Amino acid sequence: SQKIEQNSEALNIQEGKTATLTCNYTNYSPAYLQWYRQDPGRGPVFLLLIRENEKEKRKERLKVTFDTTLKQSLFHITASQPADSATYLCALENQAGTALIFGKGTTLSVSS
Amino acid sequence: DTGVSQDPRHKITKRGQNVTFRCDPISEHNRLYWYRQTLGQGPEFLTYFQNEAQLEKSRLLSDRFSAERPKGSFSTLEIQRTEQGDSAMYLCASSQDQSFGELFFGEGSRLTVL
View 1 (cartoon, rainbow over the protein chains, first blue to last red):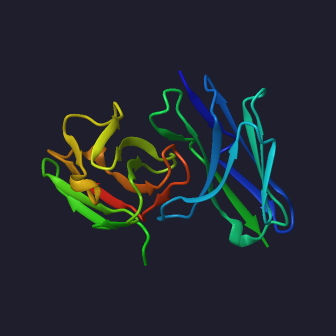
View 2 (cartoon, chains in turn yellow, red):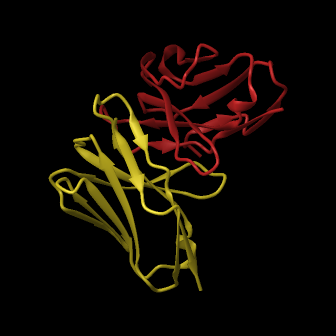
């Protein structure tokens, strides 16, 4: 069955370091992959979408890579700040193209 | 604010009661989605509408759940005979694209079933 796995439920890093979050998927051949940020008690907020023919995409301090051979996406936050502390979710369209499916998320804590 | 709005934000009910949640999407968006989220989990897909047509329903959506989107505008999600396992955050999202592009989420409706 189709599965999305995000590495470790929690990631703790120091301010200024680069945070790297992983999203692995199985039994998918997605045309694109999305990343969202979610703060406690709030709805997810879209960050980036990367297509299968794009190896890398950047937005300010964010960088996403998409390796369709490894079936993996990496999400990087450079020069991390305490304000980056949140849960980050990856999302893929399911094989049938009938729904957008989310991973469990990785909670990032950036300490000053 | 012209974002996605959901009402009510919080609902506490007793087991066996019916509850209804409303979602008003961004006005020019033709796709509307409902998700459910429990603590420590990602959003779980429930259903989505393209205009007024309900195009997909998850197996999570039991017979006690029904969603409507009359006239392709706002949507309602009704849960009949609530159970404690229905306690969750119910999230609504909308999008403009024909495929699953960027989703705009509301702040959610938190349901607590006692």
